[in-house]
Length: 125
Image (tube, rainbow, N blue to C red; front, side, top):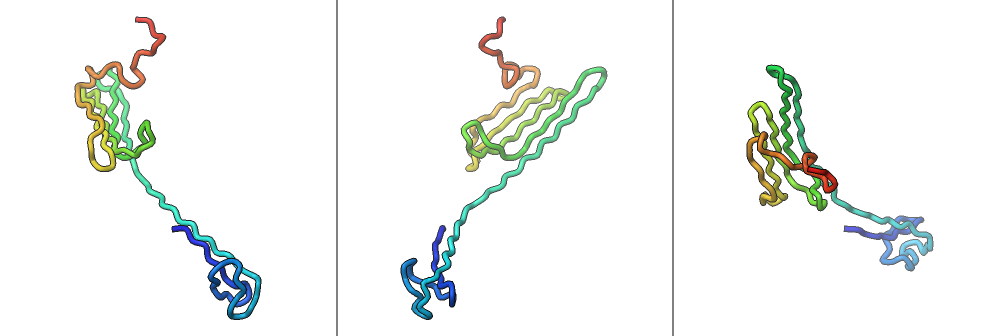
């Protein structure tokens, strides 16, 4: 809650309003104390990514778990697992009340045409 308080500059007596003379010492000099309060909320996210080569094949494993800002600015909880060794793609996005906004669970080899792999409007087939 924001507040404004007035005090006598001479004796530090609190005044009822800005135009009052100090009832204690009669001074016209005033100090004004303005208090502004705001809330800050912090959210965390963990990303783990590994790349390598197993049996001559490029591998990638990625796990994301935590909070981020969604496309419309709301804070959401996202869990994503990408594992081309086990051929797994899993993504679940929930709002702060725990309601599922989006869920996708399938083989990574079948997860095509999403994100950066989407076809652009000017792409020729």
